[in-house]
Length: 264
Image (cartoon, rainbow, N blue to C red; front, side, top):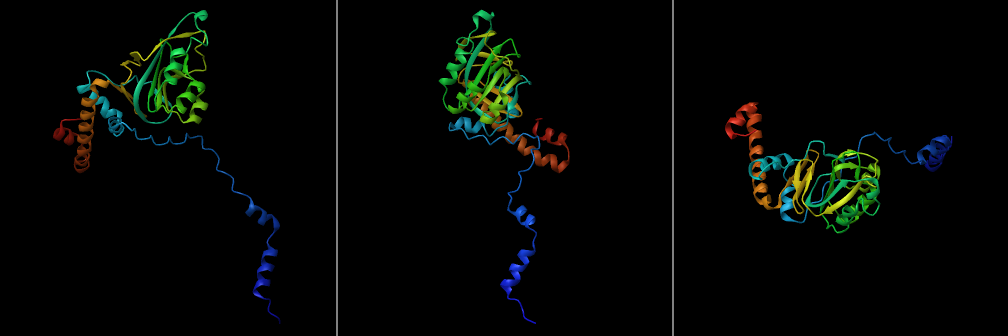
């Protein structure tokens, strides 16, 4: 009996595989189905300013505690300022204020005039703080302003008001913290008052140049003239809490750690 050469055996084996199976192997794998979960936000870039870089390493909770102790008052914004477009950031505030007016006093030229000017003059790393005085039903910004903020390198936006064009802004990757979402345009409803002035944003007065720290924990504003003292105290608080953790694990008790460090 003649023995078929190895090459012949291999060719015969390939020929025996159904053509459909070979075709299946050549088709690229189908991407997995979407899960409905939001993708994780990219890590925030480390600010170039050494002070901002240090603030970025401390949690908003520790910074809020430091504000209570040495900052002269509350620093945390109202609880409903939430990350509708996720992403942590630290930066210096650039502000804009809008107020409700009769419809005939609100035009495309006047409705967002100072917000647009603030964004167009912003520096990389700035945080836009837009206040829609007295309303959560009208959008403070949407995709056009969001695109400008992104290309100018702004770190993020904080809105005491609503956000619109959410899908578009998520695609930009621009973090936005707002109090609500609404499709309503400011035109015929609001007029721009001024920019780069002190504003009352979600319960806290914010002045241009103040430091804004935002993460999924919330948003904290630190007055620029208190920044050194607040940062030092926040770092001290963070270190104290880190030292408490081994004690809690050892004794399986929070109470023991509180007694040792007089802190909760």
